Length: 306
Image (tube, rainbow, N blue to C red):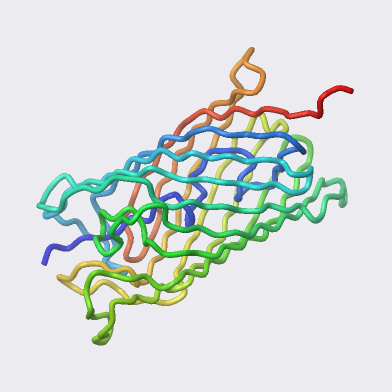
């Protein structure tokens, strides 16, 4: 069998590559009745992957590449409570072999972001933020087609807790996340993991991750930061020699990158973002390099004058 490996997309489990400000991985909040929305284009590719913990190449698939266009919106219900929505269009292909590329809309993610602490401690402006929400597939894409499937096709519940500290323009943010994933139905009635299972349902392991970022920012308009992101499934099994990957494989990834956000002069709300990430270490994952860039616009909706 051809050896192939799944690349985990920048949608729910690895948001460190997202360049938007006021997202689920930063300590910034959208002000009341403010709306920020836009689009990010992303590209990632790899020609090496970890088969278990063994890093290797595979000429049967060559380079696996992914393109995505992510639509994101964030609205301030209050100064301390935001709602975030995002959905990506994804296209995947392999440069060699016979696997047919896939493209289409993936999952809708909805999150509530709540800042429950904001105070000055020993000269530091400290805030703590909690997030909760979930995601669900928007289309009936095939999940059991790795590495070219658009996603896992599971319904997910998501939680994140973060702390942000800033002094002047310098800041640091740390967060931890947990994802609970539903079972997935596949188009076969039996499959092998570490034992033979006679079912069309696959139980996906839960996901734990943490994210560290530090840098310089001027409010939410001008941001430059270094990011480290870690993702681990809580269970699963390694890809076997000369076998294909599977939905319930154990997956780990450590990534390092940078994010930038710059306001566009004389536009009163338009900003440009750019992100670059590369994979330091992994398990049953592609050793991917990722770049993204896009535009977002922030608008304020005030009550009409009396």
